[in-house]
Amino acid sequence: MAEFNEFSNISPIGEWQKTCGCGSLRISDSGRNVILMGWVNSRRDLGNLIFIDLRDREGITQIVFDPTVAPETHKLAGILRNEWVLAVKGTVLKRLEGRNNDSIPTGEIEVKADDIRILNHTETPPFQVDGSVDASETLRLKYRYLELRRPQMFEAIYTRHLAGEITRTYLNGLGFLDIETPMLTKSTPEGARDFLVPSRINQGSFYALPQSPQLFKQILMVAGMDRYYQIVRCFRDEDLRADRQPEFTQIDIEMAFISEESIIKVTEGLLSAVFKKIKGIDIPSPIKRLEHSEAMNRYGTDRPDLRFDMAFEDISDIACTSDFMAFKNVTEAGGVVKGMKAEGAAEHYSRKLLDELTKIAVSKGAKGLSWVKITESGWQSPIAKFLDASTVEKINERMKAASGDLLLFVADKWSVACNSLGAVRLSVAEELKLMGTDKYEFAWITHFPLLEYSEEEKRYMAVHHPFTSPLDNDMHMLEKNPGDVRARAYDIVLNGTEIGGGSIRIHRLDIQKKVFSILGISEEEALTKFGFLLDALKYGAPPHGGIALGFDRLVAMLVGASSIREVIAFPKTTSASCLMTGAPGTVDETQLSELGLRFVKNSGL
Image (tube, rainbow, N blue to C red; front, side, top):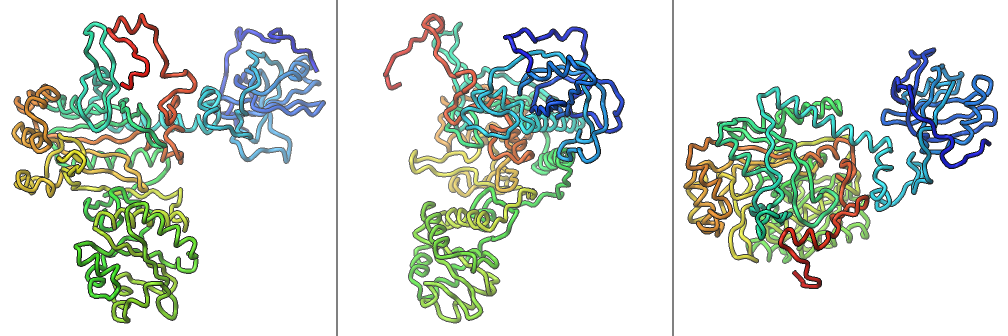
């Protein structure tokens, strides 16, 4: 083996120019002289011949070093190690018979090296970049630049790039304008904590990083821009999880002089373009729609996973006449009895698995979970003895139950029954492997409640945001029955995940003031926080509305990632820190002084 002496073997790139990527060569390139540059992915020394796999973002090419062709180059190849940076000059040849590698696109060819230049060495990496040995997420995030070398990471980042390109092309073709909105703006309540930026020039005052461009895009509609979009960074200081980051990206869209139908049509067209070009999938059009109340009643959630059925049936009218007190008492108190059928699952579910389902239901507030296995001889269930034959027959008929099916019931107030049985439904689907990774089921959820009452704050809160328009037919209920008012709001759901949401906005000043009043926002507070929007509504604001699609979530679903961290180049951890850069970090007293700030240790503030 040749002697390795620090950096003595490193060569300048000189006049060498890369001719193609490591993933682009095919059998049709045989005989071509090429120059490849990249990283050593792996090395195999067979004594006479040395093979390396050279990797760049496009793929891998096998390089062969033959001492009979280039003895000095072969000698230098003897010191190569994984992740060294290399330039190779050589000839493309067809691999020997039986030596093809069908797992890579370049598997029919190899490059016989005439000359190489070692462009840089590497220390031993903290984990293998080729992925044969995995590492903890903490380690991978700390050395993110190494993680990003992995082919699967490049695929995710490239898919993200492609989705952005398709989005811009599609929206530009419909006459939308890509307009930037400020990153340094005013703090306004939008449902999460703001990230605050102190002002040096105006000491004691703070900018806020935008949670969304919501107010600015409405102002753009008042300004006559008519059709706006932006692939925009947003910031929310909230507790994190797999699908949340303190800084995230959304496809932001706003249109004037439109209805819900216009926005839904544009969104469906955009999603169709993205999925067709990236996944080769045709999305059914129009996408299925469910009103919020129907989604809750049938699936127990406002983001139902429709890759499988198992919709709920309400058997309250049957249960109220039974002698089973757990059902009867609930219905007499104004509650409901909801049931779901897992077709053919009776034999699969042991008592242990049924106890686990009960724990899930109880964790969501239910008092318990009743189960029934349908057999050839009838019901097998702890509750069977409490129900007469007529009641059993009616329940079987309502739920279309047959031998081999498993029936599950929750009796409680409506919200608890929906939520708890909804969680049970997802668990059953996961256990029975009904969530195929190759399935994509979309749904629109419409007519959300405009407001929800907070027992903690003793006031109504906006379900979406305070600029969402009430449904025209419900406008008369704003004063006396605000909790019954439906919103002109809509979410787009994919496989049980909300990937976007929007609404028609309030464009009349009198209605906006009325909604603020119901929300407990005084005129003074409204002027302080939203004065510029209220002023704009005085000057001929057109009817307008829009939608924001979660770009990170969308890309994660396109590549099959379980976390959006896998499709963001430099993500934060669940503690909102960057392990690579060490952010957030401390600043010195001089910087604080310039901002008119000082740090008080252990202040509790």
